[in-house]
Amino acid sequence: MITINLFIRYVNKNPYISYFCTIKENVYSYTPNCFLAFSLNSKHVGITSWAGSCGDKGIPGVYARTSAGYDFIKKTICEDYESKSPFCQEPVTCDDENATKLTIKLVPDYYPEETSYYLKDITDVNNPEELLSVGPLDELIYRYFTFEETICLPPGRQYQFEIRDEKGDGLETIVDGEVAFVGFYSLILNDIDEIKTSRNNNFDSNDIHEFTTPTEIPKACVDSGNEVVVFKTKKGRKKKKKCSWVKGKKKVIRRKCKKKYNGVKVFDACPLTCGKKVGLGRCANLKERMLI
Image 1 (spheres, helix red, strand yellow):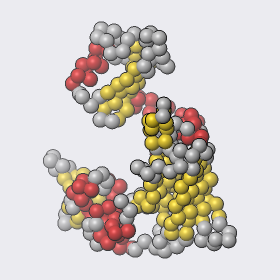
Image 2 (cartoon, one colour):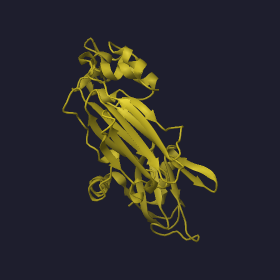
Image 3 (cartoon, helix red, strand yellow):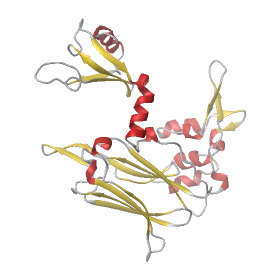
Image 4 (cartoon, one colour):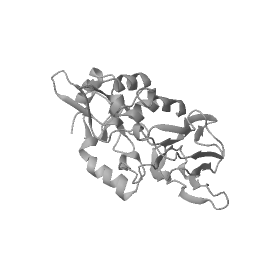
């Protein structure tokens, strides 16, 4: 338990902390009538159980730190509700080294029960094989939340992805005639190539994308699966990172790829990532095939 006084001082000291509180009939009470959540640097850190007011000095409130209930939250979301949130997903590694890993990422609107998607192997046009059929999504779990699913696809085959919206407004939420929220979906190959996205390009009733998986990934363009020592801290400690660490804006990625330790640069240890994302290293030519 902490008091409102402590929370208010913390807010004043850190402008990156934000909170909101809703009221019902001008009376503050326990949830759901009064709900307060606060975040630090866009990270959710806690909620309120109840409060006599909302941010008034000298009036106490009961709060909970989200991390204290991590195990319970994860079990409830991932096991009880079988959520497909990235929060619940374990890293996927394909058994076939030439297989292509496809990740389907979806952020639905306020009506996820209108959304469904399908993945087919259409190599044999006369006998297409349905690999995935998902939806309609559970409205209680996936409203505005990220849905993510990963599947390994054999090399050299043609696939078709289709997403449908029953209402015909794509992933838009319209309130009082105005667009209040726009979700999106993305298709990502091998954690790097975003080959298709509806971000900033919403669809209506459905959207279809076809693609072919490569026959093989060049051996020289495979990232190291081990931790790569990339630099030393100011205190002289070694900082170990895997290739998944190479992410962010292009300027940040380039800086990370150029780091070196004991003569080995990151773009040599992570040629696939650095080559496709920013065109550095021996696989720089792969950047030409990446959709921006």
